Image (cartoon, rainbow, N blue to C red; front, top):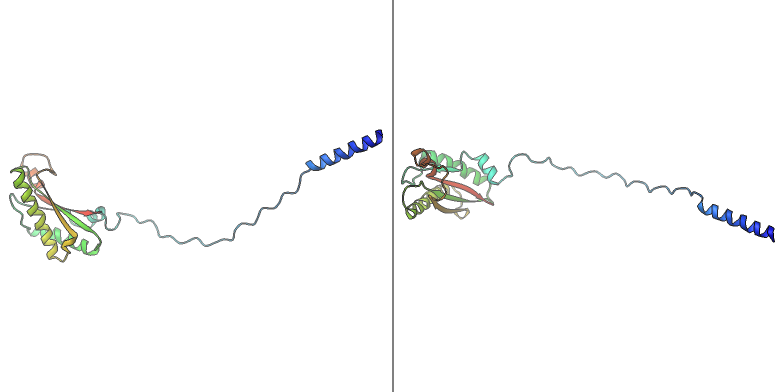
Length: 168
């Protein structure tokens, strides 16, 4: 019986050791076949086409200036508005708002009305150059949003303006 016990003990040890034996590792699957990477265009540099930044970079100015109590478009204003009309022609999906502004002199109501006349004068000139008027809205801020602080002719001249802003 001792030899049977010993044989069983050895057989058990052999089975236990064979269960712990290292097995050959399974080879990993082959890598997927190479596929051509799509060609991507380089990242654009500069402002996004049709944005306010593009507008500012492309036109001679985003604003026209007026004399005291005036809203007529002079030769210098015409040049600025022509450059804006060219940009608007190249960007037909973009609409703009023209903001009319005044200096601090005069009543609130007077300046709101004058700012509206200034914004409409710029709008009408752009329309005369072929820009669809439905793409242009106007608003008057009167004297409420000065570009320059001060109570002198230099500040007043900067505040008598119409500013074109793209609508996003």
